[in-house]
Structure formats: C-alpha cells, structure tokens
Image 1 (cartoon, helix red, strand yellow):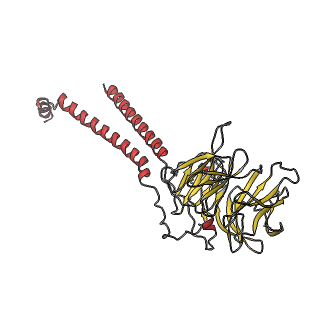
Image 2 (cartoon, rainbow, N blue to C red; image 1 turned 180 degrees about the vertical axis):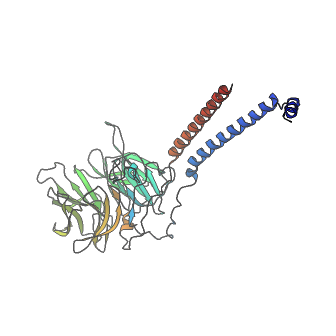
Image 3 (cartoon, rainbow, N blue to C red; image 1 turned 120 degrees about the horizontal axis):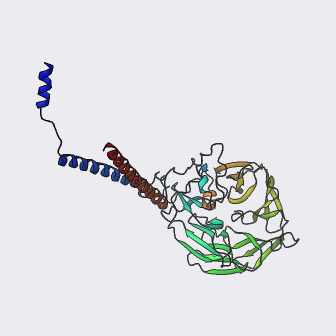
Length: 422
C-alpha cells in the first residue's frame, strides 16, 4: 500500500504558480498598501484642519437684542494654539485678559496639567459675549477696553528708536488701526473717543471713527486718567518727577484742557484706573498704599479735595476700579499669593464681595456690563480644542511627514524580507 501511494504521488502533476499570476498578486498588494497609506495621511490632515471650519466647541447663544449678559463667575486662559481674533472676530467683548507675559506659571503639582498656561507669552485673550475665546498676539504695553466692549486700545510693539504707536482694534471686525501715541489711558463713556498720552507727554483725545487727534493739555508726566460719566470733564494724575514733593498731583479739567482744580497727592496715592470717576460726578476713587499687603480705597471729592476711606484690604491688593454698583466701586484685586486677578464689589463695611475669578494676571471689563447690578452667571471656560489655522497646518504637515516616513519604512522592511527569502 505504501509503495502504491508513493508511486501515485510521483505521477501527480506539481502545482506551479505562473510568474504572471504572482506578479499581479504582488501588484494588487502594493496598491492596497499605497491606498491605505494615502488614506491614513488624508485622514490625519483632515483631522488636523477640520477644526478651522468646525470649531471644537459651539459658542453659547448671544443674549437677546438690547440685553447685556451678566459677568460669569469665572473665566480662564486658553491654550496658546487657540484661534485668533483676526481669524474669527468675537466682539463685543465680555472680558479681556492680558497681555499675559509669563510662561508656565502656577502649574500646580502636576507639570502636565497646563490648561491656559501656554497663553502666558504676551497674548491678549478676548472673551466674547457669546462665550467664545480669541487671542491677539503682539501687545507691548497696557490695554484698555472700551465701555461698550467693541474696541480695544493697546500700545503696539515697535523697534527701539521708532515713534511709538497706539493700536485701536475693532473687536467686532478684527480690523486694527495705528496712530502715533505712547500710552492708552481711558475711554469716553460712549466709547466715541480715546484718551491717551502722546510721545511728547501731552494729553490727547483720539476720535474712534476718524482717528483725528486733539491736544488737551501739556502737563508732562501723565500716568493715569479718567473721564467723567457725562463726558465733560477729565481727571488725570501727573508725576513728572517721582519722589519730589509738590509734583505728584491730581488735576481736574474740562475736555478743552482748562483746569478746574489741582490737588497734591502723596507718593502712596494714585488714581484708581479709567473707571475711577464715581457715577455722581462729584468724586473719583484713589488707591492709597505702597505695600500690597495693606492698600485702601479712597473717595476723593474734587470740589474740596477731601478724602474718605471706602475700605482697606489686607492680603488682596486692589489694582483698579472697573465700574460702580449702587455707588460702591467694583475692583480688580490680586489674591496675595499668585498673580491671578479677581473682581469684587467693595461693600460699605469694607469687605469684598467676589463677583468673578480668573487665572489671568491682568483683566479688563466693559464698564457697561460691570455697572449692571445683577448676579454673576455660570463659569465660562475655554474650549479644549479650537485651534488657530497655523496650528492646524503645522499638525497637518507633521502628519503627512510621518505618513510618508511610515510608507518608506514599510517598503524597506518588505524589501529586506524578500531579499532574505532568496
């Protein structure tokens, strides 16, 4: 039996695959591999670029026409790769954080827990009234938000020896215009004009629509200013020779620059920001104190120069007044431990009612929203992934490079196997 089976096996034809069949099979295999590689690369590129057209988080619905939103209980700094204002304007603004200047601060115990920390590189964060977040890069100095939240004034970055410029940004369109100037100071209550200091130290007004400049006063050493609620008077602080008695003063004038009063200030006193003028038009708020651990808020009567304390805060240094509610100032304050800023209402008993917290080191709010005496709304956090166009292209390009390298490596590995088989 064994002999019979052996003879039968020798007589059976040997199955041989033709060279042509094997070549076509290999060609089909190579086509499938190439198609899968291209599909993977296209998918990676699409995944990277899609967020430009499809934001990662849908914006919150805007309030009804004529209705202003409430301040949120908290806002945060987004990632550095977030979308920019130029790509998708989101004004009018609910809040403006920045410019952020520190990198990787306050990261906590986990070094990988970095939400918001990567934006601390000079970027300004604009939070729209629809809850969206946008970045503006390149601010060189202080920024001042208009009372209606539609315009942002900032000091533009310039090279040394070049005339300094001020940049006015329309947050609703993303357009930016530049005019000569040294320091932004305050806005008129109707947001029609900007108060600024020019490169020669003069106090000037700039028309928001036409950019026409007008010189108001030439006192020198202007460091702060505020416009009265009715827009007819200006209070500005001058300190041309810091530390010299008699030079540090608060001046009140009309909008033509004609002085109405001049009051000497101590070295520890300063005007409390662009919104320092009280709603009654008879007084302005000053901050008093050199030590951040013990700084008080004063109400300064512009008629007789009498100062009344509104409260003293220990461990939470006030930065500036951003609005008023019920005749009481609303302040931005530090937390005494980190550079994070919060917003609070200074009560009659001198305590602070917290209205909003942030993880930013500087905060601007539209005064029209601050002055609304309504409870704070829910927290408003940035979306995790809503990247700028440049970030999408970087990631997409990297994905294509990785896919190409993977294809080359696969082919080299297959060729080595084929050579080893022979």
